[in-house]
View 1: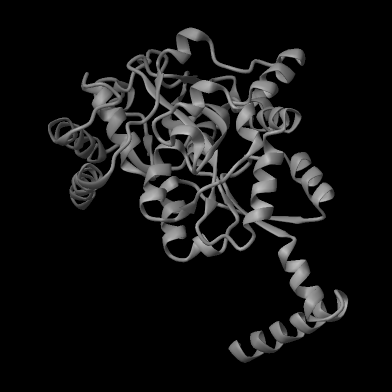
View 2 (view 1 turned 90 degrees about the vertical axis):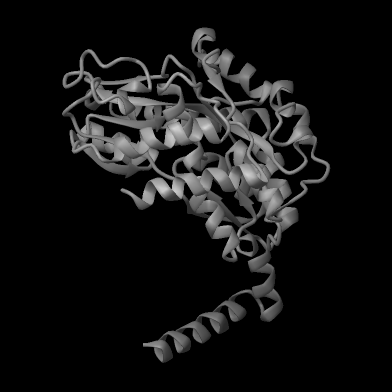
Amino acid sequence: MRKTALVQGVRAVLAAAVLFGGAGGAQAAEQSTLYLYNWTDYVSPKAIAQFEKQYHARVVQNYFTSNAEMFSKLRSGGDAQYDVIVPTDYFVPRLVEAKLIQPLGKLEARQQIAEEFLKADYDPGGRYSLPYLWGATGIIYDTRALPDLPHSWKALFDEKANPRQPFSLLGGDAQVLFGASCAALGLGFDCVGQDDWVKAGRAVSATLQRPNFQGFSDSTAAIDQVVRGVAKVAVTYSGDFDYRRDASPDSYRHIGFFIPSEGSQRGVDTLAIPAHAPHPELARRFIEFMQRPEIAALNARYSHYYTPNKGAEAVLAEQGIKATPDRQERDRLMFVPLLEGRQLQLLQQIWGEVRSRQ
């Protein structure tokens, strides 16, 4: 098997060399490929096609389902495999600290970003990342099975709110999960510190032991589970929900979504370049291209997420498309607090103890 694969690989390389005019041609072909590590359904195929046409390049996408998965992949060598990645805001400092991403340098696209996003604490001034799209973390549920479900994080963490119906929790990084648990306890979604995290960890641990807890699911899998009736309550992202509901409205007649009353995550997904990206200059062209107002609007329309791009907001407004949540809903959203050093280690330690008792 290994020998056969090797022979086939040699033949493929030789064929490519002939096709592109020798080894130099093959190398040139490789240099015109951009490797994108992205969330699923998160960039318009039309935007990709336009970029490929303008820059005579090819975009190859691989996908991750959580920031933790992306981080692990980069630490195991992925920082030399991909040209552009799409980390969520609170993971950017972790990537910087681990030396897994590089400074972006001067980008004209920064002028397109609304000031509130450039002032964010996770990457002041956008040295290592540029905001791409943003949305909210919320709860999806079956309105027939749970017509009186409180629009609160207690819908997940309070057994009285849902004593029997199957439910799941969002997998990946523990910080959002502990924030939700803290909020259900009245400690605030943006809780930080040992005392609050221990209380939140105990609540999470008790939740994982409940007989109707089904396990952890990523955002898109959670939606699918609720639509199919496998689960009745789950956690998902606003854009993922809107994307799928608009594609199949009949399947969502009895599916609700809400931002919990205690507050929730305002997640900004960014564009960044790994530390050892094979094609950093092509990556910068890609990031600049993605922030052209008409392209940013195209991606917002396609993904059903909100755009931080000022010009794109104007384009969407002209098209009669809602470019931002209602003020009442937006006021309930907050950035996940930044954790570094000992604080991050403490959270991971508590989370490890919770999982070990599952």
